[in-house]
Image 1 (tube, rainbow, N blue to C red):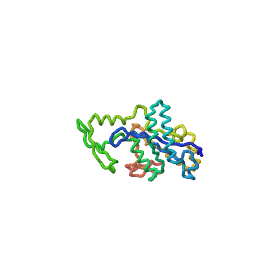
Image 2 (image 1 turned 90 degrees about the horizontal axis):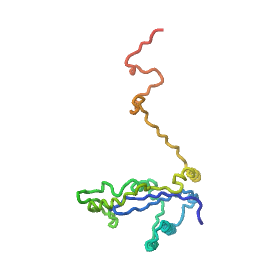
Image 3 (image 1 turned 135 degrees about the horizontal axis):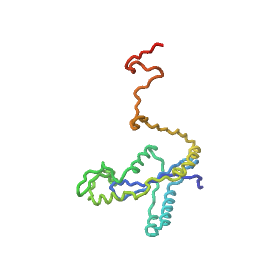
Length: 232
């Protein structure tokens, strides 16, 4: 039976690579709060094996509609089993955030992996997952290293992270509050950020509170000298 509601997911194009080779996987993260109210009770959405087959068919269909009509390539896609991982994170939301951070704001290779850079070649560290994750070194010529690195540079105006469903900007304005209400999510009041006080004279310096006077006459130590009160 087809479930009612709307799904939401986040798609991330990763450009980080272990050996700086051409490897740009697309990572999609599905969120169960996409208005599937029955999930809160049954803890079930759909079978993973069926999801793999449907995802493969939909993907190939989009390739055909985009103009790709190479039968050899399209048929080879159906000869391989597509793996769609669909499970809750074992470590909780914090683990997912740390995992995403390694892909959303990093390039093909980070500086700490570079061992040596000369006028002819570049040596860097990498993990060989075929050898139980052993740390190894690879040396490439400058031209080959630049060629591999350039493959991870995204085209102009290409959006690395896209949001779909109720996570998109258009849906978020009108339907996010309805979903939160249906799932009985306790909304937190937004934190109002206050700007630092500026000096009224130079309008650039920041005012820092040193002393706060109470609602009475100032103490003598702040006057410097005792004031005489004129006689009436």
